[in-house]
Length: 157
Image 1 (cartoon, rainbow, N blue to C red):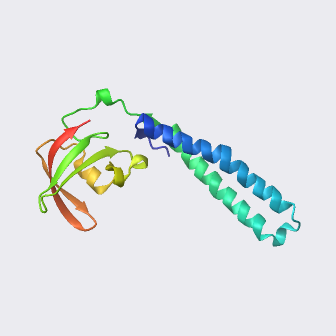
Image 2: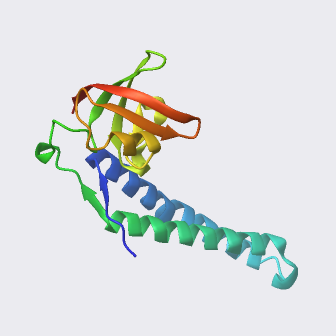
Image 3: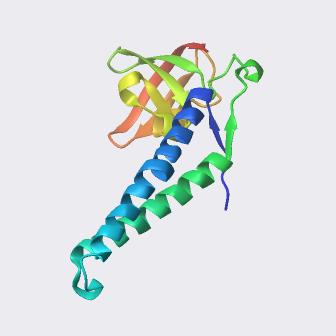
């Protein structure tokens, strides 16, 4: 089952670079480890060989998943996004109505999220709660700690 995911050009490049690293650096490295372990003799009692084969299986699974992600990736055309609502790639300035604190988040695809740099996934509780909302809206967002009420102060790109 394929799921289309939307990325910024930078996010897709990062994903492709990681996939290339796995295929062109880590895959040959594990193959070399398997060959070295195989040279050490009896494979039935060779823990090093078993560990390398297991690592190879995990790597191949990761490569397969990433290839699927890349093949279903779409670049976001920011020029066609509606600037009046919070959508993927929106920069949203919020005010926590309980504490009065201000926060600014950029809504991004799940694989591009990075809370330290203010990028949150559109599939996160806050991201889901903001999607489609407009400047001035007050939103109640269910998070693990309870419900937080935010006012949307500004939406930009």
